[in-house]
Length: 328
Ligand code: NDP
Image 1 (tube, helix red, strand yellow):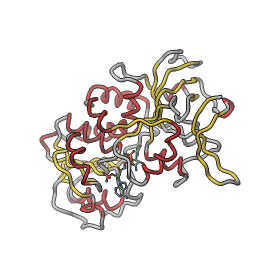
Image 2 (cartoon, protein in one colour):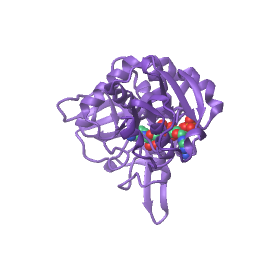
Image 3 (cartoon, protein in one colour):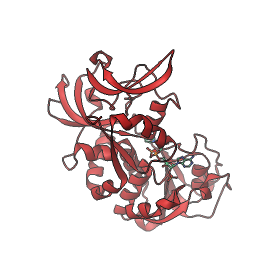
Image 4 (cartoon, rainbow, N blue to C red):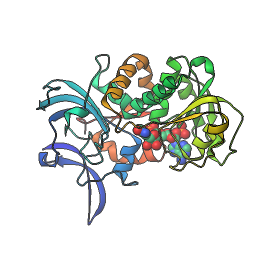
């Protein structure tokens, strides 16, 4: 038996609660991990509250990411004691996840914890930070350079947004943060944003083309925000779309694509190939100012997870939440 959050669905409805979980609940996998830290991402909020059908099998341990130490392995790449990270692959959705003391997963899903990071820091970064890195790597691959101009980050106070700002500013980009919480301007500037705009500027229906402003964009919000970001992206610029915090729709026109040659990159962290993950984690270990993680993170125990998941979906959580799975 081990402690964890279990999501069940039955006559009593959809329920997530901290409880003792039987080992038999764990799915097949070559590697058993003693989880040290997990996190709460937006998707975990959806899974825990049942607000969207993220969980596809019941009972389910939610938690799309974790870090910890291997305790048993029949996979050639891993042996007991190895420190590992897991992000995505349907963990916490179709395969029991990280919000528990123990997880069992496929060995091919794991990434070695970079030696520059502690297990806790890796989850302070978490899937949100790894996704932010994938966004930044897509913009770099496109050829966006700091001298090209301002980079917009939407959903700035959230997990992906916060890490994206810290990464981009450390890499020398001029970052403009779009947020619904302008009271968080000091926090966002502390992370490296040079200016903060109110998200209402981007939230409504806009024109097919707006004045060219952004050299590039990291968008966590979707819907009109993404459409407006594309409309104001400069000739030849790039937009990395990773989120839907404002909606899944994309009410845009082709104008920015065919008249300004802009490129829209879709960013997926869940099924990203292992090589790209390793590259992203290596870059996070070297390119993120780890001292910024302190300002953007707070730690909770398992007993607080259900409440904080609700707060997260309500947009009340700033930055990143890490979960100490050994703290009640
Ligand atoms: P958070 O909840 O931490 O942050 C989301 C932020 O979006 C909020 O803090 C808020 O920022 C803003 N926001 C919330 N609601 C709205 C709204 N209705 N309209 C406009 N802005 C809103 O989530 P994460 O940072 O973890 O994730 C961000 C998005 O990225 C989510 O949609 C998530 O599902 C997605 N995601 C996708 C991944 C992928 O692989 N593609 C991986 C990880 C996340 P503010 O208060 O500053 O406005």
